[in-house]
Amino acid sequence: MSATRQYPRKEMADLAARASVELEEASAEEIVRWAVDTFGARFCVTSSMADAVLTHLVSRVAPGVDVVFLDTGLHFNETLEVRDEVRRTLPVRVLSVRPELTVGQQDGIYGPRMFHRDPDQCCHIRKVEPLERALHGYDAWATGLRRDESPSRAFTEVVSYERSRGKVKVAPLARWSTQDVDDYIARYDIPVNQLLNDGYGSVGCWPCIRRTGRGEDPRAGRWAMFDKTECGLHSAA
Ligand code: SF4
Image (cartoon, rainbow, N blue to C red; front, side):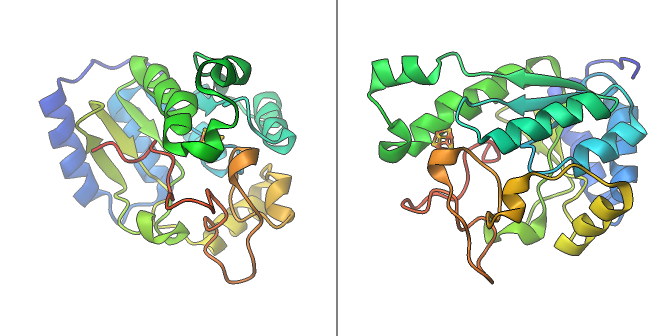
């Protein structure tokens, strides 16, 4: 991808506001094409490695795109296997971003099992701060958020501007249903995290997830002991 100029913040906010309206009915590929044409190499993808749908889709439009994976040190092996398969099989550059502290160092400073006492702080150390660091060299990032995943994601815009980060967030799959995702996986034989075939409705760190029952919100298994539904990556305004 060729580099484009860096946009001033005000211009990025205006760009995002216009694109949010103009691309609301656009296909996922058209949304990605807009992001690539607008931001070039200053655009990246983030992936939780639940599956490789978004990564695959973006790599078709922009081979060589950077894919940011937050390696919290607390992932299931199944998740790391998807990351490795993506790295092996897709034309992308996977960047595994780690927290400043290892799990052992975090335990030493804050006490063991912070995820069971203060998951917000744990998520901040192991996810939010690493994401801020990873996004430093980019103006725009794509996420796999979908409106039908949970009530907290029901109003996801296809393009938005995060004023606090100074970044444009792109959600090409926002309007996709679970069926759309399944169809794409079948059509392109996309790598899928085995946890999703083993009763987990979503993918996350092993201490903070449980299997979900039939008919349950797919994200109901996250931080089940707490009044917490998101890790903080998507709460930037
Ligand atoms: S999901 Fe749990 S273990 Fe992972 S960073 Fe957040 S609180 Fe920590």
